[in-house]
Structure formats: structure tokens, C-alpha cells
Image 1 (cartoon, rainbow, N blue to C red):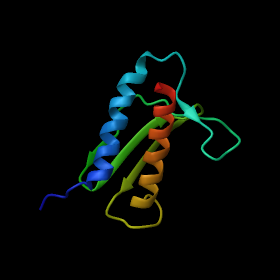
Image 2 (image 1 turned 90 degrees about the horizontal axis):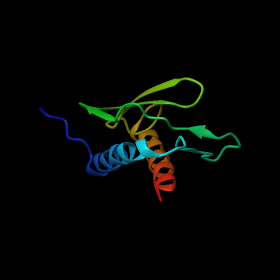
Image 3 (image 1 turned 90 degrees about the vertical axis):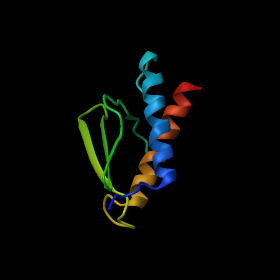
Image 4 (image 1 turned 180 degrees about the vertical axis):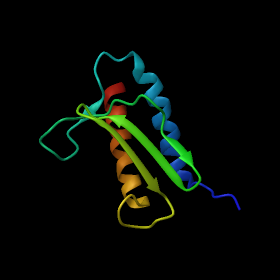
Length: 100
């Protein structure tokens, strides 16, 4: 049985991957404050990947390489669909702001 990715998640990931490609020409590294007082960088070397029910996000935040794996079948809790939606929205907001 094939696991289907929810359409809204797949749409956000495709848009982010396109924005990552477009951001290669920028002089600055994309980032934002995201409700904090410290600026966070989102320096992607790889596209966001979907494999089975997992979404893999890997980026450099300015201090270290961050690797996250989210399960979109898990409703709530650590690395759940709820956290995945928040993370994708945060990334999408930062890239849209940087590329406008």
C-alpha cells in the first residue's frame, strides 16, 4: 500500500524547493526572528525530501547543521504533522520575504 502525502504539505514543500533554487542568487542568507529575539538563518544545501510518511529537512542555522525528520501520519507530539506544518510555514514565510 502506497502512503499518500497530504496535498497541502506536498504543495508547501514544492513551493519551498522552488524558492530554494531561486534564492541561490541572493547575496544574503535567508532567515528571520520567528518570534524570538535572536535571528535564525535558514541556509539550505539540499531540497526538502518526502520518503514514505516522513519529511526530511536539512539546513544550516548559522551554528550547526540541523537535520529533522517529521512524520505526517502522527497527529501531535514531537516531530508530528502539527510541528511539520509550523516548520514549513516558517521556512516559506522567510523565503517569500527574502525574494520579494
